[in-house]
Length: 437
Image 1 (cartoon, rainbow, N blue to C red):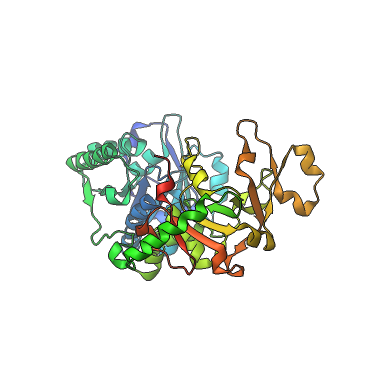
Image 2: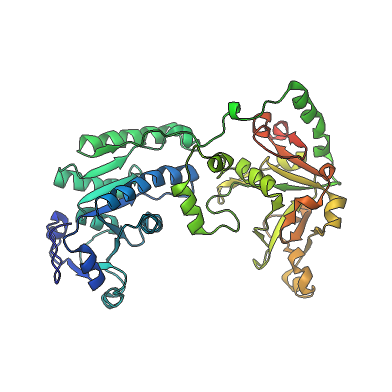
């Protein structure tokens, strides 16, 4: 940052100099931290829910924190920015001092009263974005992810054009092999933007030794043609419309059920791609990853909520898996399919003995008449969708798979390749041929 004094915060930022009415109000904690300090700002476009993007960005974030610690730099974090929760967690993990920066905070007195937490509030009656503010204030800027056409791209370009001092580092775009949901045009735009920022004077930030977080076929047990044929023959149960309860797994974006946000962020930042834990979690963020975790834990964790959103339950469909997959559809408002070809089926009579019960469909008034310990079974009749077609069953709490015989459980995935990655004593069935074309 520009020269600092104990009683007064001075800045030579061209941006803030151009905003004549901008005034910086650091609290005493910020003044102590920033006195004679050099600063770094880490910025990022919105990271969304993509685990590969989280991991890619956080590898650079951890590198930035380790270097900041070695160089005794102070981290500037824009409040409510996309990177804020990640940057705070990284700074605390690596012991890097940080200062929160707000623009036109809700109250200057609130910022100044919280003397224990270093804060700087910038007051101005001119347009000034939070990312723009810290990019102009910091001595060095590390960008861990930039999206073409976004605010972060704009503020980076302004800094590069105004400074031309090789003080901005930009991480390489996320490799397409780690982001299968990224289209070729999006990848091309990301690469073009990266090249353009380098031409303006940004330093290309490359992390060497990157490896895929996915298990390869060579790391999985081989499956003989006889085993493949057995799995195909074993799919007859998938057409049974009465005797099996089907639970389809979904990809878990963010923390696992029961895992805190801080624990998830620690895993993203600190896990190594070549460690045993990372290999076991190699498909985290996918349906296969969720299923793999269920089988390792031998437990279906109650994470679905009832229609009144007050009881976590495990849900099952009492219809044939083949019909469920054949009629599945994509829900644009949820950004996912309603059913996925990954999951576990339990023989219905065994599930009933374990406490799984059929859902009671009705009106909200009917729910009130149910005993308290039976309300988890209630599902309101849908107005736009007929939920009764699912013939849903539920369990109040977690389902322990250890209580079932192996013959009462079926695991299903689309392909033999995915089946090879699973470690389980339960029979596995491949069901890709049931998907609607």
